[in-house]
Image (cartoon, rainbow, N blue to C red):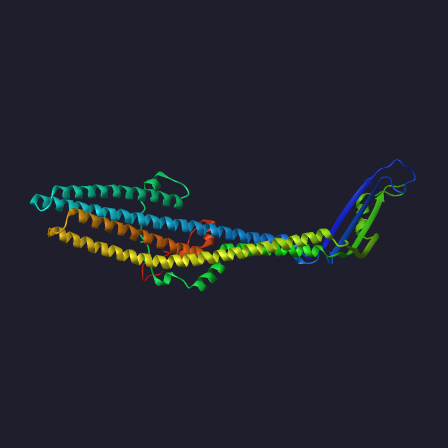
Length: 417
């Protein structure tokens, strides 16, 4: 029993035949029933030492649940990052396509002005060179987009298929724009992380298991003291000169308590100093101390990750704002240079330079948005709120049956962020 109580019940029957003379029965049947109970009072007494394996198994199940939760969070973060990379590559394709269209427009305008005698042939060659460069960049951007699309498909599907390979992923959600609400308070973020992160729960379960081991070793250091009781009954039957009998008669005497036996008492034993149990207790305590150090290290690492994620969000907001402004100014400069070219005050080369500056600024803008989007994902990971953010039920992830539709993690400005 879980209190340490143990009992035993035994029933035996023996049929004997002998060649000896002058025996009471031949053949004879001997039977015996015994019932014993033993209750420890010191070592081995109580629920903790006797249910320790059940407690450990429950903690291990909880740990396995947290390991699964960590794996699901990691998988979701990988998909989110891959999605935002795909969105960034898609924007890069749009940027290069617009740059190619602008270059072709510039080339046509330069040809007309060259025919009118206001520009030289070298200006046409410069515009043609820029168009060729834009075509090269567009091919590279489209290639990167296709590669990233394949990467996202592999993350989303367990099995590949020709239909999936030929399908095109259509993005419905743009990369989120920065919002002040995206950066949580430092104290709140750390508190949330320490409550939600799977690593903390795993460390707590390990400490619980070690506490169980310590309790067991401490219990084993106690002397052995127990009370016991025994009841037994015997029966004997067989054939003789005046009667016949067998197993039924012998068992009848046994269960009718014709020849009862009983005993009760206490048993005590102790080891002097008990070095083995003391060594086990000390080792268990040292292992717990090591786990406490490991847990504190985990807490420090989580604190660092939370702070790094906050810093990345703050810097990302500033980088996105600066990238937007740089793109706006580059567009203004390009428009002004085109006007100068139309009025004969500039050259195609200068316009090409301004177009390159605009494309560079647009690439940097896309990269800043991509980095900021990934910073949001990292912030959720650091706080352990990825599942809540995406409205994902872990139990549904275990069964593979999804009933609740996941939510968009980062909506547009003014929406549900």
